[in-house]
Amino acid sequence: MWPFPDQTISKPESFSANNHDSGTTVQLRELIDARHAITALGMGAKKGVYSLLAGGERSPFKGRGVDFDEVRRYQGGDDVRHMDWRVTARSGEPHLKIFREERERPVFIVVDYSHSMLFGTKIAFKSVVAARAASLLAWASHHRGDRTGVVVFSSHGHQERRPRGGKSGVLRVLDVLARHHQQAREPHPSQSFAEEQSHSSFVSALARVTRTARPGSLIFLLSDFRNVNAQALPYLKQLSVHQDVVNVLVFDPLERDPPAAGVYRVTNGIDFGVLDSRSTSLIEGYRRQFRERLEFVEQLSRQHGMGFFSIGTHESIAEAVLQGLRNVGARRKHIPVGNGK
Picture (cartoon, one colour):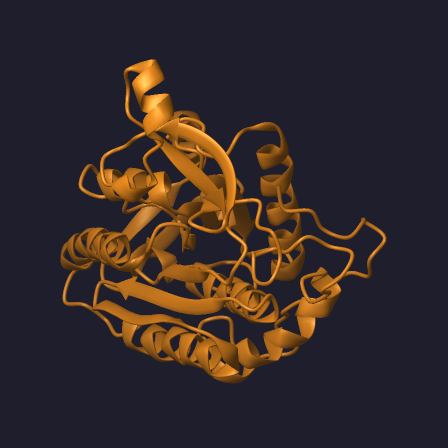
């Protein structure tokens, strides 16, 4: 679990439209300022609270550390140096010793800037909300003494910074978040091309993290998960075996609930269409599509031992992150890490 201070702590400082110029762009200054919210989130205290991200304190996640924790069945790709030969001989099946992490750990923050993320009707684009949430997680990892890296992807490709400790490591992450968002907003010649590139970039980013993240790493994936396809799923499942993964679904309330009955002109910036929200069958399908996507990611996370929470563009980002991580911690308290992997 991820224990936090009790609910009596003051409300965390939130991002708002009054503090920043636009909800359509990611500004480096606002990402840097997110460090002020860490104390209010309860992530900065070294005493009285278990570590959120493992640095300097015993981690609730499994990794390759110094304290023996448990034995589990061997899975393809595991380090054979940690084989428990006695249990293997007794059970007739290969088993591995698992240790509990006590040193600093690499934290990868993977952020989706694909075409569907460049949308929002409340306060900010989904991509901007994802970047702001990512900045909170980056500063939190710094306060816990961990090394922070980032992989940002869009239909324009991806950028990566490997985990590095200290404030300089966080600033490198934030710089990539701000710079790549500007590039991601550049228009494409067609909607179909943008969608095709987004699917490809999602897979490439996951493949990259799979190759570079060592066992025991903590990975946050912030996305609307519209581009998860058959090619992406194996990488997600593979990551869940050797790393601790937390999936964060970012959504806009208009994706969940259609507008009031009426006829609306809609556009993605290239193509135009009409939404008739007076149609009962259309509205039922509209709501079902979002519900199925949400349930799919929740079920995928549960089946493979990954954490999961969601953030709406209409919500306080800091409060949503705080509550989401508490919920992940509560579930991990009762469900053994690695269950379903």
